[in-house]
Image (tube, rainbow, N blue to C red; front, top):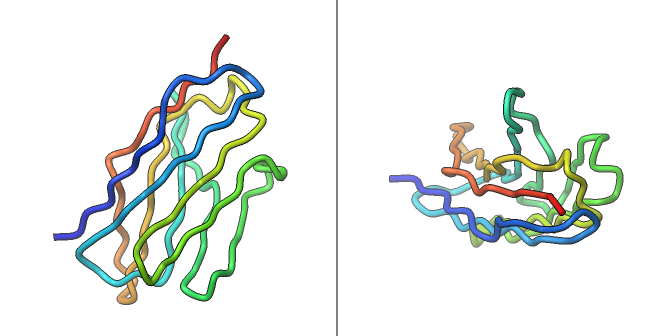
Length: 114
């Protein structure tokens, strides 16, 4: 059974930082990443990292978020900086196996509010 477990969400003030972590098990991954879904909006991609360490970011990240990890160890981290209220969302860990199957974690809530 494949599992992806996120941790690190919570409440933070605008301008603050959080670190989200994800640990996966049950498969071998070629790529892992993070998505988020805000209330009333579609789930959107934030960033990915592949098993060669190559990273890709969506434009809205604009240098505020950093993805890192060790795909061989099935771990991925997302550092969130300069957080804004519009970053409030459920953040989901994502994994794409070497057989191109896709898996998701249960999500971790991030609330940015003063």
